[in-house]
Image 1 (cartoon, one colour):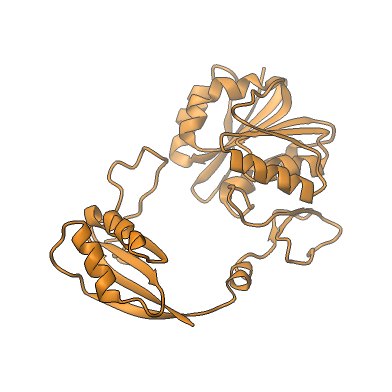
Image 2 (cartoon, one colour):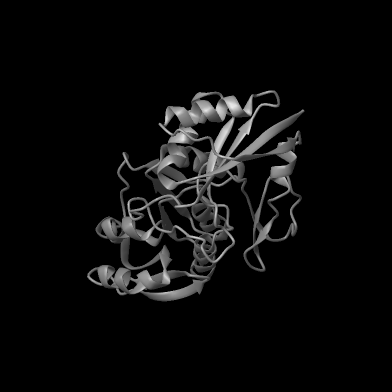
Length: 296
């Protein structure tokens, strides 16, 4: 069986309503892309939630997946009419052959070598180095598979700082990868907290799979106590807001690492945290930085 992948051009204002109308009409999926991607007119959209004031692209491409026998003209015509447009766009159709999608997805994820002794390994792979510390972690709904530069920066920081026996808090734990790494590196007590209950569920499942004892809670459950090591790999906006809460969990003489920070944001974040502890750039990767400091 082959599905139909249909694409056509529209403007930023119409793209999302058309996608919604297509889904309502029975499309399997609908997405929006920058029609100028790969050209000098490409318009990258970076930023955190709430910081992108003009989402969408002036030249948008809608890509919709349809059943093999769906009437393309009828579906697009109905969607266009639903949003108040009068002219049908020109479209192209590409056949998408049936595949083993699970196998195809898995083939895109290989083990990630963080260092000589630390690996991130999807569950369907053999351990590349049985003598190394391996975190078994599959791509899922929670952020943190080891591939993003900020996650790697935090993992490398933990590998340098965990000597054995530390209490560690992963603030914004996502998949739980940092807490699990700390435990396997020798921390004696690890905990994590996240605003997303699904992330907390994922972290608990990942810890069980890795035979790691860790405590994970969502933000509705207050985190108590001070820790030797605190890591917050989130984004600059929540790092600004949560600075007092994060720093309160670092014991005197304890260490804090922050990531999810772009180079141009580092100076501002350092200034905000200076009232609790001095921070400096510990490492960089691509356009991202890891800040670290010791609480007086």
